[in-house]
Image (tube, rainbow, N blue to C red; front, side):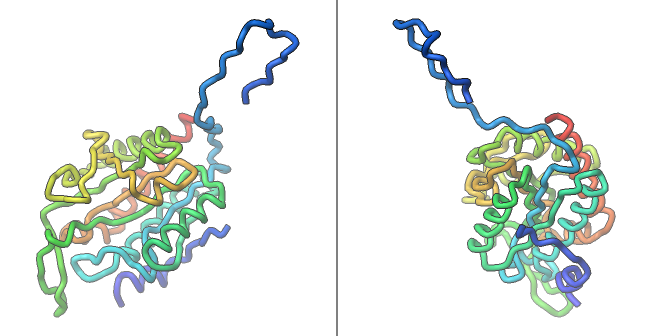
Length: 270
């Protein structure tokens, strides 16, 4: 049985369907104009963990499964398993309203569906879970268990993405930095290739060189959600060694605990 089928069969996930004070004209001097206040972004409410609505978006879908690993397993299975584990750790940390969001459909239709679901649920935070690959031109070929597959051992590591088009870009960046710092302190390295010209259209601005936070404005799941949102590429599954690490309970637990600890600190700062 493939990794994806065994993971999907083993996990039960939840699909989440789910001003200025008035001016008293009688008190105003006749010849004096009252200056208009500049518009401000909506204030963030105080975070109460048990009420804080976290959506863990499982990247891709069963119909559009994302990247294929070096051993021919679909990214969707990796995403589903890790999101489920992160959800458990967040609930154990007191974030009782955490939900794992799984959507159906192909590519863009699935993307729009998950954004719509998160917004309809009035999410306070969206964390999208993915696993990384590289552009096709950088892939090499090998054979695993009699089947041809593609791989690239050139790059490894996790990465975090935020969008300046998100209404809560500041809060998104704060959490991404907290998570990047926690992952670094747990011994993990972030992926550095996104700043390189060879990445072509996948090249992105590095906002924090210490912890690996990148700007990616075009991501629908980040730019169109009404809450703070971060996308986590947990590791490269086309890197043969890192794919094995991403399959290990130790690495999965490390990432889940890092997310939980970072969310606690993020909530305390609100």
